[in-house]
Amino acid sequence: MLSGYLVTVLITIGIYIILALSLNLITGYAGQISLGHAAFMGIGAYTSALLYTKTGLGFWPAFLAAGLTTGIIGAILAIPCLRVREDFLAITTMGINFVIEAVFLYIPFFGAGMGIGGIDPPRLFGHEVSKQGYLLLVLVVVGGVIAVDRWLNRSWIGLGWAAIREDEEAAGAMSIDVVRFKVLAFALGSAGAGLAGSLYAHFLTFIMPVNFSFAQSIVILSMVVFGGIGTLRGPIVGAIVLGALPEISRPAMEYRTLLYGVILLLLMRFQPAGILGERSLLPRAWRRLCRQVQGRTT
Amino acid sequence: MALLEIQGLAKEFDGITALQDVTLEVREGEILGLIGPNGAGKTTLFNCITGMMAPTRGTIRFRGEPIQGKRAFEIARRGIARTFQIVRPFPMLSLLDNVLVASGRRRYPSLRASLAPCRTRATQEAARALLERVGLVTGHGRAAATLPIGLKKRLEIARALALEPSLLLLDEPSGGLRHEESQQLLDLILRLNREQITVVLIEHNMRVVMDVCRRLVVLDHGAQIAVGDPAAIQADPQVIEAYLGKSEE
Image 1 (spheres, rainbow over the protein chains, first blue to last red):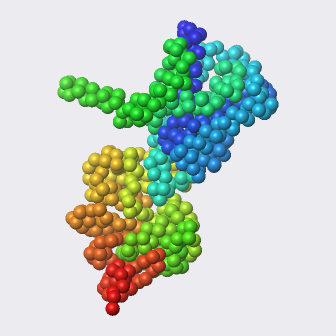
Image 2: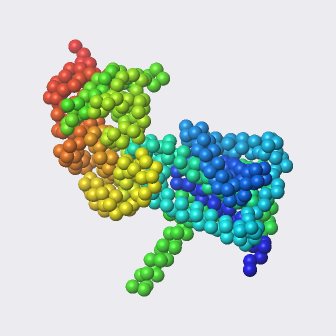
Image 3: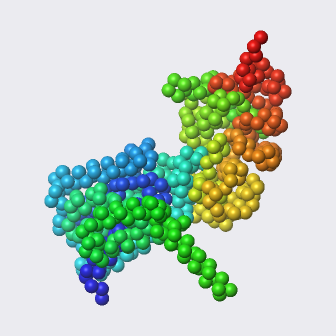
């Protein structure tokens, strides 16, 4: 049996994987930088928490409603993002994060500074799901997100996103409805964050606005960039490494933000595509090794 | 019959008149040459036709239907494809994916059709055939950014052809190419034209224009100053003045 502490760490990492993959869909695949992903995680967490504590809805419908609501809000908030690109988009999404956090913080309906407590773990067949069971649930959701990610990446939607990321105007001239594809990316990416937020709320059983701050968005973005933006494996590995790091060493926990900042700076300078990007050092070395091994056996 | 009819088209940016009162038609099956000195408004005209810019005034009809002010993707879906003066293939996508992007034109309107896998054997074979048709026979998996300029221009044509266009707008296809490269490109354009694709060509190289175009339109300072066959255009005093300046007498 896994120890309780290890299970807690694994659940946290699983939730981060969902967050990193859903941000990667917006920023990696469709090329739309977002510095406000934690806001959507927050919308999911608050939707789920409010439905659970105020309406008496169970975990399962609240979980699905969190994904749906966040997806819809993501599509609506994509509209102000459509007219801006790159650095202006970064600032716009950052602004969205601050506004959403302020809404949670100042409106009593959302519990204001006190947050929302009393969010129980889900029940299955009349029993409360154990911590191990919850880890299993998180892993199932991670698997689902990976499946959707792979599907989209192989579809015309994934190809259209890639074209928009490369050259938005040329993509339009090649018959792609850029507006629709961008809104779709924001909606799906936000929905993923909403599901992660719901899992987060029911795991912690207590949420506060600060959990969904701009700093959290940077943590998620760091994971995507660290592993390799625009790939499937990159955000997963990024979430595992950067998620585990503060648990492995105490100093890493205390200087977490500093550590992430330094990692980001070093990566931007030496490995802008992340440690596992298509053209990064590690995958290239790995491919060379494979070729050598092949050469020796034949 | 006119495939494309442009009437009284004008485009102004912050007080600068890029196009004024341009009226012309592109006939089905022809290769029309669009010439004029730098800054005459040729590329702006392409941008207005393809929906990358909205004209200030005037109408553009394609197959009799007005298309002015429509967005680029809608116009592309109707069958007008273009290349760019400064080449812009999708740099980090493979040659094959560059072409595949445009071949999705019937899929993109429906969300359901867009969810289908895009790299099937059939779509990839069709894309390969287009790449081979423009002379890109190998290396379909490499990134477009790695190609030399001459091959990037061919890739752009292959990508435009994947839209199955009936009207192809080529913005200086031979610009920056060596003589034999541009000769090969012209052969390609003539071949495409024989396959029922109407072509409008912006070109600075007069030899090229005189060789392939039966009809020319001359723009200068955003206005249309002459229309006619190459011989008449070469003799037109207004055209000579636009290119060489007024003779002193």
